[in-house]
Image (cartoon, rainbow, N blue to C red; front, side):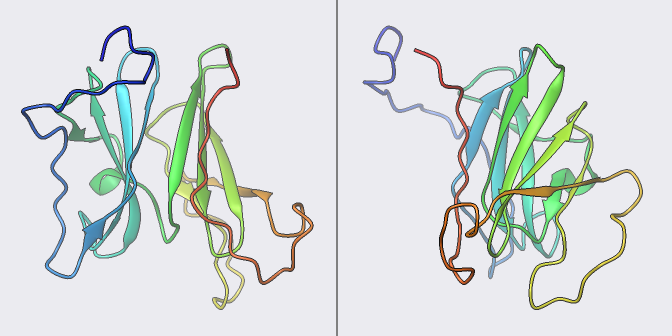
Length: 166
């Protein structure tokens, strides 16, 4: 609600986004951020636009939507095989900072445009993989159980990002 600084909310009469999934699919924990010209919504889906777990990207000129599946990525997929995600647009550097959790780490990928897909390293128990597919950015771990002083079996979930501003 304007002027409430996030303290009050008003229900909208419209659906901000419609996510297509199969009867065995679902969507979870969306994350929105602004890149200076549009709002970007990351929605983790399973059996959504593609029959895998993926981060689907939707865009809208307004925070309240309506959001449409981003056509700059194949099937709107920022990445496949990960979990929850968040993002940030660094206007000063002209970069999109993407964060996504794998099985036991939070991964970061930095892209110059929104239409660059992210490739997470193969997750255990998968065997080590080769290079990422052409045109994708290989995400690197930035938070692991070890960096937090925790046992390696610790699961790290739901990475969120927000600028530290007053």
